[in-house]
Length: 194
Image 1 (cartoon, rainbow, N blue to C red):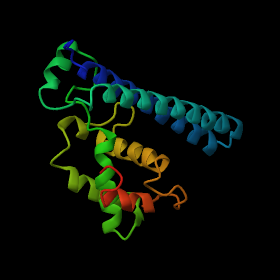
Image 2: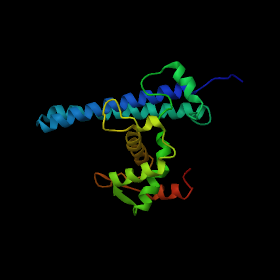
Image 3: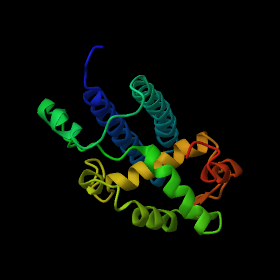
Image 4: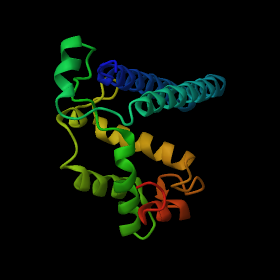
């Protein structure tokens, strides 16, 4: 069997995803400024651009998952860091950020403990508390594009987006509120691969 280390590809995907997310943040901020300036054409253009880039991000994430499936699981365990660091793949230090899927169960458990629905900040506070033993140093570092946003919080918010698409969280919850779905409850009960 051919021996290889898929970690460098996973690292490259993680860097790509983070850069795409940074671009989405920039476009969102430009759109917000345009909206505040009452330049609605520019705000609409930014909204459309952000939607396009988000779609592209989803495609890149699907490719990352497909790559991980080629090797049975994503290989981001201890020991893979040194190989990726030797490759010097960029500014995201290779202890690779914690994968989005790692946030699924903590988000669902937080929502369940909070009665099924809660404001974002309450959910994220509980997620951080429950994930402290799992999060890596790189997860606490700020995003280059948004110095007040630690990577873990950004990843948790992207996990929420994916969970809505997968039906684990409700898509019709009020703005600023996350809400578990029936599929999310089943996931926690072990029926959904958790």
